[in-house]
Structure formats: structure tokens, C-alpha cells
Image: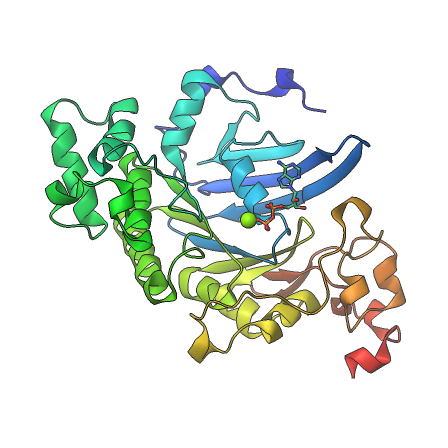
Length: 354
Ligand code: ADP
Ligand code: MG
């Protein structure tokens, strides 16, 4: 259970004075259990996730639909309250329950970009009004500075001249233009961390690369850190310094993008990779869906959650959740095949592993 008494008082949040030696974001044992339906059924959407994002780093989170990616982003953004675990921003522990001015200060630092640029902009307002709100809420501009900053934001995301785009309403924009406005709105608060949840999935294939390049440019210019959620391995490789692979709420592999994607060490990542489109067609819209299905989260096997689908499964895989094994520099995988003794066990499905 959460014990609010152990949360530091929110008034001590000094997000304007981060510890520059600390990671931009650190998650420690982050867990979210949802109650579903009336039968007391529980789903552990995020299970004991520990990871860090360095300053100026992009970490991609990949995995099939239902693996817990969005729930992680929503926990970090304080849209859900964690069941267990800690979130640190710039070295500072953030209380799991935040409200009022502390939540506002937190949100200034951590901005989210969602998949659907249609749903995330209020159609009644002009683009200029939409972008003026965060500037005003966070006290970043006043009076005539507001319009000047709105225009500058629009031009920074490629919508020039800003004064013209500021007068438009969301329905007058294409999907890509709307996502640029959403990105400008996120930047307006001058965040330190961006949580981008499948920001290109709803967009036309032809403009996905433009939006990814825009995010990379802005990250470099602003020194932002980013969690980039995607189900597309090629997009992860393009965007991220490191990749974390999720399955049934667990991180199952994490490491430098090139190592994880070109030489995956967890059979689940290998399956994702074999199901992914070839690099030359990487920007095509097919979803990365591997063979078999994500198991029922309310009824997971006691051992490795991937064991029922795994072509290399051993008897030991049923014994308990495997630990993370170091498989290379900064690279680890949750698979007993990296344990020299356990890997000697005969495969349970020799025909599949052949
Ligand atoms: P992903 O983004 O990887 O597709 P999600 O984080 O959206 O995965 O979902 C992970 C699991 O948590 C799914 O089984 C989903 O049904 C469940 N889940 C997500 N949000 C809720 C919620 N608010 N209430 C109950 N279950 C939820
Ligand atoms: Mg999602």
C-alpha cells in the first residue's frame, strides 16, 4: 500500500534546481496494478520497472500492444498513481501523489505528447490560444511577450510564419501540422523531459520521419531527455540512444539501441525483430506483431512470462521470473539462456528452436 507519510512534503520540490550529476529520470521498482471488472480481478500492467534516462538521452520503450508502455508514461506523468515504486526527476524523489502547485511545477518539467493529435487539441480554440496557455500558466510570458513567444514556438516546429498559423483552428490543419502544434505546446513549458507515446503512429507514413527529425532537432537544441514509446523497432533505432523492451509489464531487455536491435539477446526481442518490416520498408505502417499472443495479464505463468511462446524454453523457465543478465556493455536481458548452467537444460520444444 502507498503510505503518504513517507512521501516528502511536496513543498520541498525544487525542480528548478536539479542535481546536475543525477539522471534526468530514474524509476525504481515502479509497479501499477489495476483492478479490472467487479470480480476483484487484478492486472499488473507495469511490474517492478527500474530504469534511468540520462540527461539529453532518448530511451525508446518498445513492445507489443498491451505490454504496459503507455502505463509507464502515465505513471511518470502522474496521470496514474503507482501501486509501488519511486520516480526521481533530476535526482529528486517525486511524491507518488501530487496536487496543486506541486503538480503544476512537475508538469512544467515533464510534458507528454500523445499518439492522437486529433484528440489532444481542443478544436474550439485557435492554435495561438492553445500555445499561450502553458506560457501563462507557468508564468513564462506576459502581455505582448505571449504572442511573440507563440510565434517563435510555431516557427521552431516548422510552422512559419508563426503569426499566420497562430490564427488557425485545429480542424484547418493536417495530422502532421497538428502534431507539430502538440509538440510546440509541450515545448512551451520548457520541460526537461518529454514523454512521447507513439507520437507518429497515427500519422501518414510520409510525414513520420519529419516528425521524428523534428523531435531529434528539438532534443539537441533544448538538451531535453526523452522517453520515446513505439511499437516500431526501426523507429526506436532511429530515435533512441538506448532501447528498453517490455513484455507483460516487465522490462525484458535493455541496452544501446544498436546492440538491442541488431543483436537481441532475449528471445522475445528476437521474435519482434523477425516480425518487423525490413529496414528499407521500415517506415511502412504495418504493426510489429509477433507470432502468438500476449498472455492474459491477470493469469500469467509463474515463470518467465514469455516461456509459453518461446522457441528456446527450458524447464528452468517455469521456475520463476528470470533475473536480468548482463549480456554486453550496458546491455542486459531477462533470459536464463545467459546462465551457463541453466542453458544446458534440453529445450522443451526442440522442433521450435531448431
Ligand atoms: P501499451 O501502451 O503497451 O499498449 P498499456 O500500458 O496501455 O499498454 O496497457 C497495459 C495493460 O494495462 C493492458 O492489459 C491494459 O488493458 C491495462 N490497462 C491500462 N490502463 C488501464 C486502466 N486504466 N484500467 C485497467 N486496466 C488498464
Ligand atoms: Mg500504448
